[in-house]
Length: 562
Image (cartoon, rainbow, N blue to C red; front, side, top):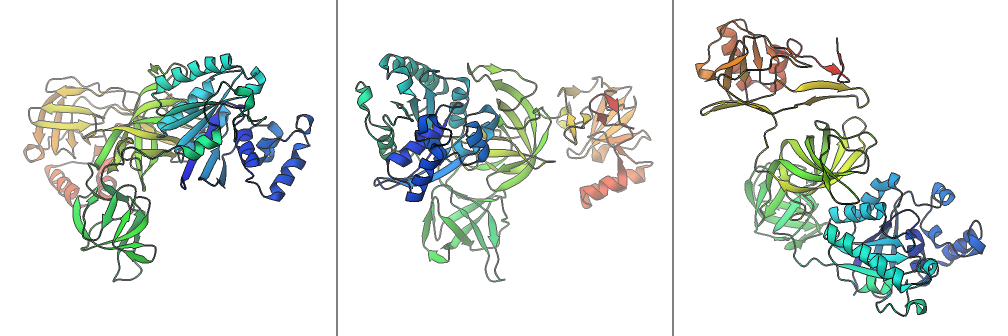
């Protein structure tokens, strides 16, 4: 089998991950002479009895060697007669879980080490859960340090039961157990005479022979656009790496999110013109007509991918500050970066039991199911259906640091109710008059949170004051996106009217978000409605609206900002 296998080693602290990979490289004669000499010299300093410390081949940072732990992800490339490999040796310490998640994002197989003395630990469970979340479908549990338990088959069987229970809980696919000693070399590259009761193959042999090809490929063809190429006025090509499927000249493609269609007239792989291309190829595609395509768009055929604005996601939170509902991020999904927010935290997952626990906030290294709303519709799908369009990261708007990574579990046909609504028959309008605006000093960010999402009908009473708002008993609301006016009299919903039927009554007027609109006559109303249709939103806001009339921003949720 002359193919490439990308795998990750993970597990708890000091389970022997770096030692395991180092021993594979050493035993398989995959080191240059100077690397082997350096390893032997370095091992004489600090190792027990001057024995070879195979972890030094992976742990290259000074802090790693001082502490005897892995901190950063170490990538190694090696080739045997049967296969080529890329391995990501990842840290086991909880503090560096985000680094481990980065390594898991590229892998097809996970080698999870379990200390034979300690058994399955919390971090073992966390790493297995992250690997499953990242789409890894092949798992090897290497039961390490068998030499320290006297190569006991009884102890191995005890841990096998723990691993099988974990695999059942997480619904892990294609699991395999191998008893090893990374330090002594048992069952690493050759069968160990110390464990004659083990009838399987050694670890390297298994890695050389395992088939990680997906039984079912992703549906259809899709190409997330990374760049539009315009070397001159005669050429316009759309560049990216094909995520799934194949394309050939003459194919009709649909451009998302717009939905336009066009036919392929040329395909370039590098600077070479080809008649077809398949998954994994970097290509430039030319179409037979001018269409609206930019970075973040997707060319597709034969898929059910569609533009979405909201979805449910499983997130690994990696920031030092807690995640709370309402927080806004830059979300990178596919080749697109777009604003969005966490509307709701449904629950966090208990690492030990897998129990879903209701939560109002999420702290570092916790895994949670959340509901996300984007600023606009973009092509996306469930991770299980289309991987590239189902994996995402959240980027902090202030620090530009990656705060979380995750996958899409479900997309929604339309955005779930995220604002209060007022309805009367066939007239309905969304309003966010009751969102509370808070300034969080630690995050240097203004966020608006809505505690409840009620539906109001004619005759219902409004709560006219909150922490960050206070409205008069008599006023009108112009819900601009809906084209509906709402008349409030003595704090109650009196009537809903289309803009064409609404008449200015000399009362205060606000928009759907509670911004005061500077109207003083029927002529002002007419001019305002015209400019809403003809001018851009920024111009309308600057000329007609004021935030501070009925609204305030709360400083750290406690004090009014003056």
